[in-house]
Length: 200
Image (cartoon, rainbow, N blue to C red):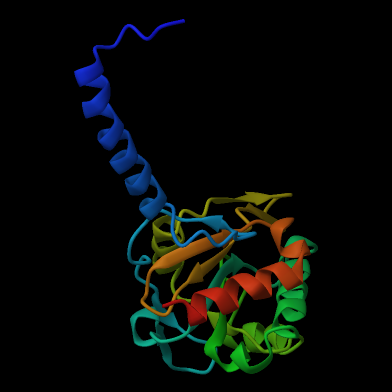
């Protein structure tokens, strides 16, 4: 079947299609296949909250390495400890890159999760995540800014919440998000993080 396009028009469209293809490729990153879900946003939301050591954590002061941000609570019976255990398995595979990867656990239950309780709970994991808390209002505002939703369950005994690990890169940009199932391949997650640390 012959094309109905005029030859001159075809000659004009070809370079445009090539340029469009190159633009799409450039927007898709460097071609590395991440197991985590890419995030199209720019700089990560602000994260400034009291830590479990009596100081203040400010995400903006932690450039140059990766920060893994997770929102949960210490009374969580399942997904929170399981997620932290999966991050332990990732850490075991990071080798020399491990010192450049920091974990941050933000409580969604600041009324019960005192700094002391956070510190005791998180000490069960290796490396020990930094625990963050604050007033209920400050924690709620921070969680909303990070796209985390939550609600009380079982008469307030538990919390149903978004379970995502967010990767903030060395330049402060939000790079990847991992759902629980994606963390089930620790070798692939470790490759993702190492790639981000060493990309040019």
